[in-house]
Image (cartoon, rainbow, N blue to C red):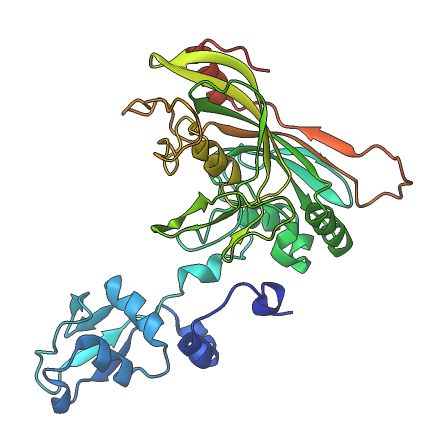
Length: 369
């Protein structure tokens, strides 16, 4: 099974697909310089155009990446400005040193640093983990190596046969806490079905700015922020039973205040959050939409001017915490590897609060609960 078959959501640019076979055939030559003579007619042409013409066996995207990392030279001088004009006279030598793209290491087994792969429980069907903050779950642009997926493939080689190495849900890089990984295709399929049916119970703890007066439910649909495509946003809630607006998805978060404190002389609330859905950045976006952004959140750490809270707190300019104060505390699901009758109690797992969160709560005068 090829990587693209296992991960149908991972797509290549069209021109990369067209030249993929040629590049694969040359893989054994990676790191070996390739040289071509610049023709007289190339003088005055753009560098990237000339490089593409002289080395047509590589995609333009791949050649551009090598240009930007100093792997293209003319007569021994490294060049990086792809839009510059060729000044060399005909007969000069243009050298390219092919190197593997960083994404080629995305699904390669690699050990994680000590303390990064914390197994709470494991059996023939599932692995339950306590993910530390700072660990990316799945490879993506900017994080092709050193992910949880790489570590899982190293510790459990059989996961290479399972799509996404058995990963069925994710936590943000800087969110700590409990998550489950499937060890068989059957277990993965069953867990995905439970997630889609919203029968998996996920409970989080978050420290938010402001005073959350009472328990509540946030039903605002979510989608990409139209002003910043790197962020998610909450949109006006639809009427009960109505379909969310185009480009958005249903998102439901239940919250319950547990304790109150002060941080930097500013009110904070220790909150329990229960998810019905699992949208990207859901708790962070939903709590911000109510005027209670998470402490330390680099993307959503400021209250929105349109927040629903009657009193929007002024967040201190200096963040007192190096990440969003969010932890996945409890996870509950029907174990996919064991026969169960109706009424069989689900399996439940807990990841203790991370030490940095305990320190933060102490600073706020809050007893963890």
